[in-house]
Length: 290
Image (tube, rainbow, N blue to C red):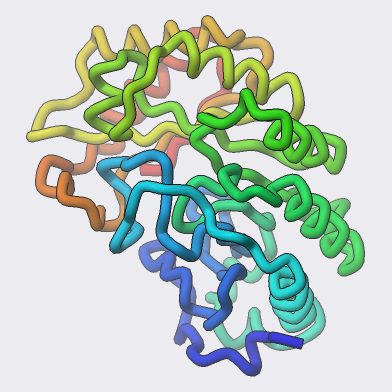
């Protein structure tokens, strides 16, 4: 069995500002201290090749390349996750590496270094993670989450994985950073029509509890314009506000590793709160993480 005790490196202490996927020395499993989740998140990285079909300007993945997830070794994934959960639940991993006030498991999250739904075995990976969470007595208290750009929702296998996530009481955090094609191209590095994003968001919300995950920041010193925020809100309305759990609105807390990093700077807390107020007026719950 592969476990943290046999891994090549250990973190001194988890921090919200360090989401290094290699901290536990494993291929697919990595722990982070999530400011949005509010505790320890057990990450599942199905993109150890640093490949993604998007290129977000604020992405912290070094050496990011265009592409999809590699072939996934499900046996290794199960071995790593079982070993890590054993140390987390039954061992002293929390005491060794996590600040006392945040020693709580908040979720097991498909995230990592690219788009997780691009893995050919995504639905099988979801089933595996759900089964192990049940095995370790976490199913009732620790949700399984998917953090996704939602671009592959039209594919049947992706829908199957998200449907299983919904059946297990999990959540999807669906990325929507902008509401116009121009802003999506600049921020996410993709050519998309807002209508297609809204359709995929609605599909996702019909299969599993879905939060919209939105990063907002200054670009070359300029805050998002009124027109850009209006377009963003229009996209959410088109998807169906009543179908969504709410919006996770956050700013930049860690350095981008992309060439666009020089254009980015954080919004103030007050600026983020002002945007949150506009979202709330549409009837959505908003959680703000500066």
